[in-house]
Image 1 (cartoon, rainbow, N blue to C red):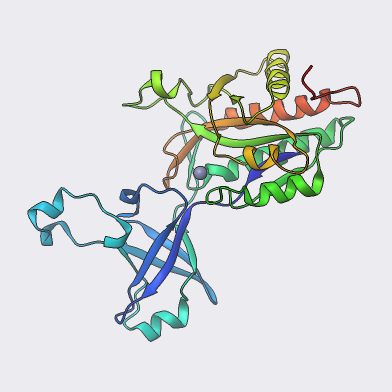
Image 2: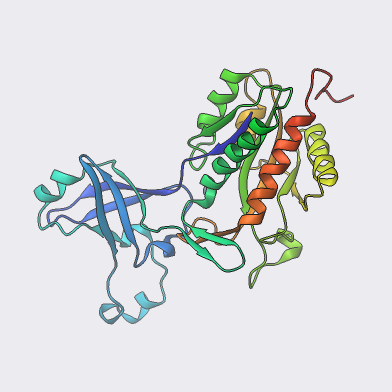
Length: 295
Ligand SMILES: [Zn+2]
């Protein structure tokens, strides 16, 4: 089973006031500063509703307010409504939304978008399957798009996928923090670069056998890679999958991503191709003789 989560971080409408302004809360892990000045797209009862995140203008702030960080409770969403009734005709409490931000291509084969975390993982697992369809493996391979990765400690859709499919082995494809920008302490966060190839995780949430097989596959396929040490939970779908059913041998492969959880995440397209090739080559190695039981 190859798993990429397709849920993304967002906002949720929590209250509509007399004047039609919407209060909101976060879905997933946000730096609240990112909301300031953004446009949002909400999923209203009869379609998309565009809004802007409102904040008091700099000129109207008291001196001490200017030095304060913004919190969602100080912000609101303005959808242009002039009353609660008008807003509620379009929006209900609990409606979700995302920042409005399209995809753009940058020089050097870089892709910029919101929710690269983790639509890109879902893309990579499908690309791996496409490659496998051209040169079919002995193993049955299934790609799954999971949900609730950004919010659930229980694993959400990854657990149900693993319980249903009961795979012999699973690889989770997600993003990891690229550390190739100013101010990152590499001694603390490691050295992961756009264009550096996939990061293969090693630690208690992943099978050492799957890890070694992935590394061996990368070596034989001449795919550049890095190793990512994860000394506790990975905070990905991996925990939900390795704990599902009677336990599943699980690996985690991550694509270096800059500006995680912002509307402008950035990856190198060559890393996407390398990760898909790594997955396809891994799947082609699997046969009835493959064992994931440590000896
Ligand atoms: Zn995320």
